[in-house]
Length: 177
Image 1 (cartoon, rainbow, N blue to C red):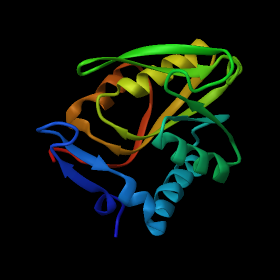
Image 2 (cartoon, one colour):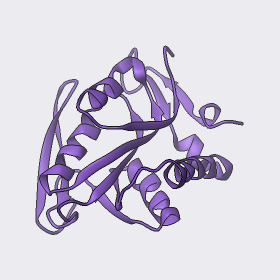
Image 3 (cartoon, rainbow, N blue to C red):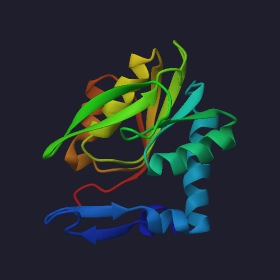
Image 4 (tube, rainbow, N blue to C red):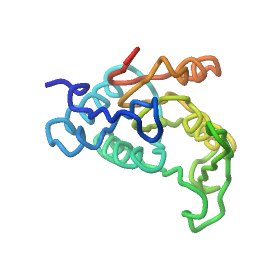
């Protein structure tokens, strides 16, 4: 059974008209979780994307990013919601459909010139991923690529990210669904 078929669809969540793609059904399945981590590991062992550290976006990016960092022998850096990191931080605000949100990274988490693989579970609008990329760049890092389990291309986040000059990889997508 492929990755896509292990992802639960929840209609009208978090609001009417949204088809929420829930990866918890994928990662609770040991075969599904292994497919994800093995698929990402294979991508980064075989495809010449050079990076030094994995950056995971709260919260599901922590699950994926830490497992991937382990399999690739890389370090892991978290991007968190405000107020969760204990040392000096850099913040980046980004727009939501109704309002704004913010993410943070430790000021000393990434050395200047460090190449980063940015990991999260799902790419929809691209707002969180672009905010995390801005944080990486604020502390001197370079985003080598952004990786996701799921891409929702109809929402437009992939196009926004590509238009900013970043590389994007996803294991599966739900187009027109």
